[in-house]
Image (cartoon, one colour):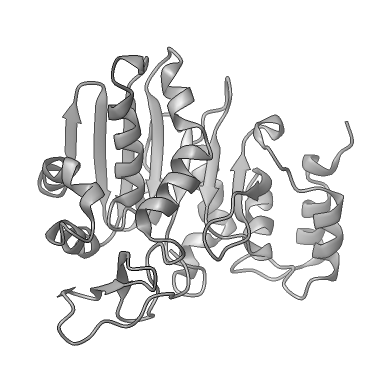
Length: 290
């Protein structure tokens, strides 16, 4: 989700509560919030963005080919379920090559975007193979198949993040932007996300569409190592965070730190840049040589 890149829908656009369907300039269908106007996955369309950021970038298929315990994916901001279904599709398409189960835990406060997307089969064809799964998720809060489990925690994500979760391998962090949904981007929330991440083995990766300096500052303060992520559409970079520095392909370094020193947006989301906060950022182990 990011700032709008779709044309506002006409009065006849399907609507559900505070959401409507729109057609992006490239012809892809997407969901837009009627209040603040943000479009979900506006750059290249929902499916392509989900595949590039959340499936290909963390090499999900490769991880699922490795024997092990269930790979747990925390999906923060289910939306129209594009990211979750991209992961589930990857797992299903591996067939016999998949050597470990996949468990997706989706957090969402509003199911209208998913209802709209499911009702537009031609606009969201990638959801159709998982239509029954999504309907079961909305109805029962869980869907299971062979080696796949998809759970929904409906309601305020801040409350659900305080509840127990299995150790998380991947985080898809995809709420509305800090401008529209500021409470989800604070150090407190991201620290709670970090606390659910797997500590042993390869640790955990967090992917998000935001490459803003305050986002990266907040992730660093929350205890993550932070790097540049792949581009998508009009976004030159996204962000990847990790519990282990060596898991990052392009970790932030001295050049980023120098740009941060000169930036007019040096503070973390939802807080001021105090001397104490600045000292914590500069003491982060990411900047230690060797």
